[in-house]
Amino acid sequence: MDFLVEHSHEYLAGFGLTIVLAITVIASASIVALLVAFARASPITPLRVSCNGYVKTFRNIPELAILLILASGAPKVGFITSYFWFAVVAFTLYHSAFIAEILRSGFRSVPRGQIEASRALGVRYTRTLTSIVLPVTLRTTLPALTNQAIAIVKGTALASAVGVSDLTHVADTIAVTESEPFIAFGIAAVAYLLLTIPLGILVRRQEHRLEHV
Image 1 (cartoon, rainbow, N blue to C red):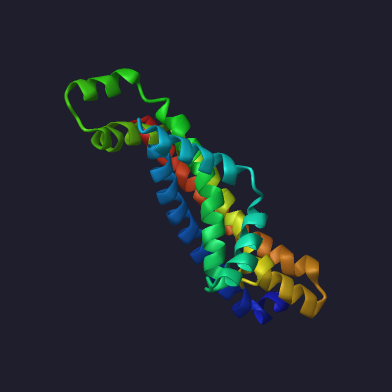
Image 2: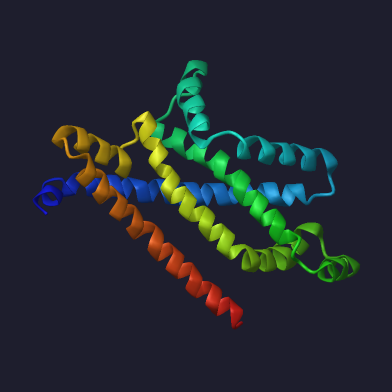
């Protein structure tokens, strides 16, 4: 207990930064993935092909590799920002590809008759996607999207590799300083559980509500 009290301010700072990083990545990756998923369903072939290439590329490159490429390569071509934002961009590229694939599978669950009826009524393509396809997709893909959000929360730990002072980086620093890696990382592990378990519970409740709508 004394160990935790002594380093509480460091853990709280790291915990807070982890939350900010996770929320930022979840939001940005969701927006990018939505645009990519809509483009992949587009009748415009070049747009569809390029977005398919985007998904295949970033799904098959390790998350850490993307981060290290950005953090080490971008400054050499004149793009300089904080490592926090390098982490946001890297994680967004990686996770948006997975979310886009989840949304694509959700699009396929939409009854074809609804889409054809919309077209027959002269509803615009974008309106069909946002008013008919997207609501059904979000309902059917909610569990998978939740798992991806949890993966993002856990994946933020990789930001410590470039010096972002998140929860893992804080735990690593304290472990070296105090020579107590088990305790230092054990506290960090509990903190991650406090983030991921409530998220899973919240979404399961939402799923239960949707089943009774």
